[in-house]
Structure formats: C-alpha cells, structure tokens
Length: 568
Image (cartoon, rainbow, N blue to C red):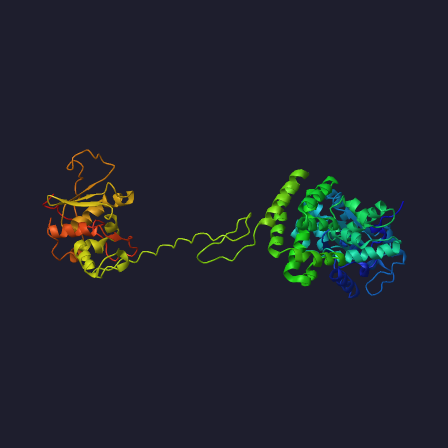
C-alpha cells in the first residue's frame, strides 16, 4: 500500500521542520550543551510539527553519531526510531490511554534499564486528554525521573494541562505555518513526486490548510487523485465543491458591473454544494483585502496572504470600489456569519446576502457631522436635501439673586428699568424667598376680595397648582404681603360657593433669619397699590426657574410657628 504524502515527507531532522526555528534551535542547542531537560511540553495547533520534533529529539538522544545537534539518520538507532521499532522510544496516545491504570503501568516500566543501552523516551501525544487522577499519579515520577529518562508531552490545548504538570516541564510553543511556506513546501513535493501543480491550486490548498502542513499534504494528495495525477485548479475546485477565491473574485466583479449575473453565479455555486459558511468566509476575505488595498494601496500586500494573480486582481478591481462601501460590505458579511452557522437554506442565505449587499451599495457615504444642521441623503435620491435647522437649546436658568440685588434682566422680558423697580417693590420679600413660587403665579388669576388676596390656579398647569396649594406657598405669601389668601383648583367643585372652597390658612412660621429679613414694615393689608401692582406684574412674560443655591431658608420649613393672623 502506498504511503501517504504527509508520512513520506515527514521531516527527519530539525532543519527540515518548517517555520519552527525558535523551538528547533533551542532543542539543538540544549543537546549540544548537555542541558536537555527531563520533561518537555510541546504545544501548538494541529499539523505544525510537535510530534515530528518529539521523534527527532528521541532520535538525537539515542543516535550513535549525532552532528551539530542533528541525528545522523543512518545508524541502527535512528532507523529504528524512524520506523517505530525502537524498544526504548515509546509513543503513547493520551486519548486512548488516559486512565490511571495506564499511568501505573508506565511508572512500573520507567525504572527499568533501557533495552538498547541509550535513553528511554516517553512521548505522550494529546496529553491534555489524561484524567485528573492520571495526572496526579504522574506527578512524582515527572518531578524526579530516573536517570536517562526523557518525557515529551504534546498537546493542542495546553490550558487543559494542570499547572502542576506544566511547572515540571519546559514548555515550548509551536505556531501555525504561513501560507507562503506551505506553498513552497508543496512545490518541493511536486518536484520530488513529479506531478504538475497550478499556482492557483497551490494557494487554494494552502489557504484551506489553515496553517497545518499535514492537512495541506493530505488535501494535495486528494486533489492529485481527482486531477489524474496533476494538481490543477479544476481538481481543487472539485475537491472543495466550488467557492474558490477565483470564483468569488468573479462574483465580486459581477456584483459591481452586473448584479443580476452575480445573483445567477451565486445560485450556481450554492447549487454545486458550496456551504453558506464557506461562501461567506471567502467573500469576507475578498472584501477585506479590497478594503485594505483601497486604503493603503500596494503597501497592504505586506499584511495579506496573496499570490501574484490575486495581487493583480486587487490592482484591477480596487479602483472600482470606494473604501466606505467596502467597509460596509465587510460588516455585512460579518453580521451574517452567525446565521450561516445555524444552518440557513441556500435560497434564504442568497436572498439575505444580496439584499444587504445591494442596500449597502445604495447607502450613501457618511457625511461629516454639522454643528447646527444634520444633512441626510435618501437612498432613492442621491442629491442632498437640506433639512430644517435645529431648534436652539434654551439657555440655562440664571442663579437666584441675593437679597437686595436687582433682578436679572433675563428673568423679565419687555420690561423698562422703572418696571423693575415696581416689580421689586410689589413682590417684596417674596422675590427673595422663592422665585419658583413667583413663576407659578404667572398662570394664576389674582384678585382682591374684601381685603383678601384670592389666587385662582384652576387654569394653571398641574405643577403650578401643586406649588401654589402647598402650605409653604401659603405661609410665604402671607409673610410677604401680610394678607390672608385663598387658592382654588380645577379639581375642586367649581359650583361650590367661594367661601366653601377656600381652604384654611395655615399658621405662618418664622426664624431668626426670617425675622431679620422682614424688619421693614410689611405692605398694608389690602392696600390697593400693592395688590394692583402684583396683578399688573403677573401679566408680564417671565422666564423663571427655581434656584439651585439657596442662601436663605424660605419660611415654612423647619421654623417656629407664629400666632395666627387677626384677619383670619
């Protein structure tokens, strides 16, 4: 039976391992200096050379004539390790020998002398599959192994290896192999095997290998079988079921030039068995490459994995797209990945993708934000439309003036300087105590009935009604004007007589500070001048708000009670 390509071309010395120079150089140097550790942990993705490096290390420690840290590969020991017949090199699969019984058996053999006089090497592949009990049983042997015993662990998930095991090993990470190195290795294999290989086919296989050289050799072997001994683009297209980068490049071009033909090509690809996830994966990569090319030109090639043909495609297709549209297409593809993984029908997937891509093509490029107006552009009409200007935000309310200060002009509109003086005189101490209460009285009706100040707030807003009906407001108005007052609300029975709907006037309160403030004689009770002035002022336009910084406490809050007024 024919040997697979990945087995036939497995590296036999450290220098043949592709793109793992840091790991191989450390192992070679440690061997030449006589500083090899007692246990190593090789970690990395699949197909990157972990097990291969472990076998080469097993060969070099048992080689009869090592040279420059490399095995000779011609002695009996090297040949025995390469063929898997060496009695002192044991390779154990951690997935199938993961229990404590297998580890106990391994421990019983560790202390025995080597059969061929060299070092005993134990290679545990997929070591993260061992059970917790198996790991615990291995701790003491791993910490103090017998002389001339070497443990090599290989895993794709080092985070699942207990920290007690990792701390007893020298951890050497391996990394993915680049597509360029995989393509170069495939070319070398094609020359040695004597088959033809298309450049596009090599790059397609390298991209689908996802950094694993073993996977690339396996895919190449299958494509050669489909291509009757040649690695052709048609063979790789048949191997992957379509959806190659070349086909998606044609789709992108048609999407820009003839969207109906792009829809037909998409239907054909999905009908041939291309999965929605693979279609999105390649399309996302294409739009990303075009977007980066539109931003940085040929400078973007350094960060992309591209063949010469693919670079030429970007140069030809890139000028036909704008960066904002390509960025939108990238986001569209990314947003559809979760749905594609959940198993969409091909017709539903094609409809969603085409709808989003066409809508993204009609969407205008984002405009810089304006300070006073926001300019929008409808999809159907590319000409800009100027919307109405934004309504300016009202200015914040000014702080409450201190006692004795003149009222700010921003609080009263259309008022002369003489009017300000009358305002200050009319409101008296009420202006200094609570501007919010003065503002609430704007929408109320103020009348003087038989020496009583009547404030009807039935037509005022609810907030003004609540303010005027509060005990604090009644006490403040009584102190400011020396008058008993009544407040009527719309919620009360409007048909009731005035006297029946007048609530009792609460007792007024005072403090030392308040008494000092009102030492001046109060306005005469029922004096026509003060009442008429107050009523006239309430017809002015006020823009008032309750102050936030209160230097004086208004009456009616935490103050001593005054005796009730004689007028009540």
